[in-house]
Length: 524
Image 1 (tube, rainbow, N blue to C red):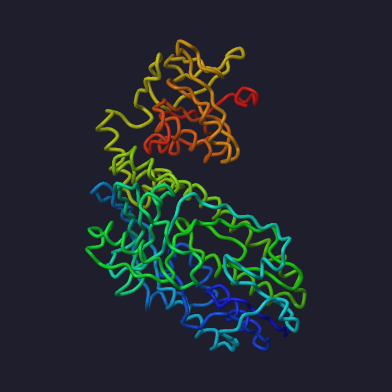
Image 2: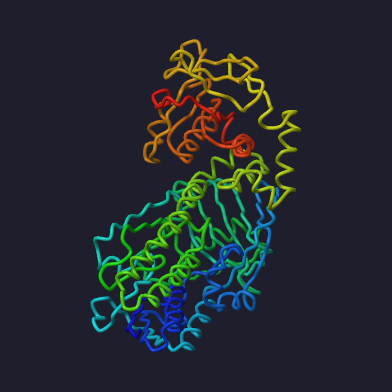
């Protein structure tokens, strides 16, 4: 099969797709249109976990070889908080400078016979003589906007972030949390070459404004960096990066936007990478996702035997569930970053570290990677409480439970918290009792937008039983109850013992109900 293919955008996804398709269909005409120059590259490092590279490496070794020759590899993630340092081992990751990766992909595309046209803006409307147009033109995709009607949505994060480089040499992925007179700041740094690393800083909007970091003229053309913020952050993190400078490259504050698109193609035009989806960088690499898109799209088109609509449909059907899985994991992680100042104020360094790394892992999965960290968390709890997490007594006035693995029972239409055969029972009502003799049942909402309304109705004191909603909304309500109001919070969640112990050890719950009445109206 011989087809004419135009790719709009010469990012990693577009370049990788183009070189793969040219390898699969050597007689086809594949052209990449890029408005910028070949040496233009905004941003710094690109990170890949060892566990996620199989599909990309099987398609073409260009990334594998590039990481081995030019990249940096590490196994341990470091957390620096309140002058303490904790580590999480067993997390093999690699990073490479974005400029280096683009150069390697450009060279690979030329080797395979792809025509690269830099400094040449293009739209799908300009490319009528092509059979297939691939929009790989980034999160602000003009191709997607021109198509319209694809069901594109975006969720704007509450926190601000800015992307720098630094000449400080990190050993691996490093999380740094600091507080000054303006508020809380967090940075993530990692090496991407022998003399440069990536340095991403986040803070909430109030902190950003109090620090005077809201003065940059956003109407300046792309490329200019926010020098005031650069100098401020160099001074703030001076000790953590040993006085090394930060390096700007189109470095400006922004709010991360999680993008989803219902339909990935229209007619002969299909979208790829950030143009169709994004996921917060604390969980996944947008570059990795784009390159995985490229593999599937190139394979589906090459096997289509002329049925391009069928190939595009198959590409979307295969990739959309995989992307959704990453985005589903990214949302709780993004929520953590939106609230890290609360956790900084509430937890000691070890609990803070464990809370962060168990955003989507339970303690047993964490133990398989790093037995020392799991053991340290459990030992610290037992030193403080004299028992393991779920065996620790819980005083939920006026009742004392013998442990924290509880049950919720329906006795003749009335709900009670119990510790099973040990005999303690606490009534659970919809509204607080004046004498505080009952826990209050709180229904978590399905939507994050409703969390504030539910939180506003929490009682002033006592015990709450939080049920329903989603794992994320339950967690958000529990944060408001435990960390902001000092309530005792019992979470109802169908889970195994490892998950229950993780909820207690991490400070996400005081106790857990792993079985509940099956009458829907009881917990509705």
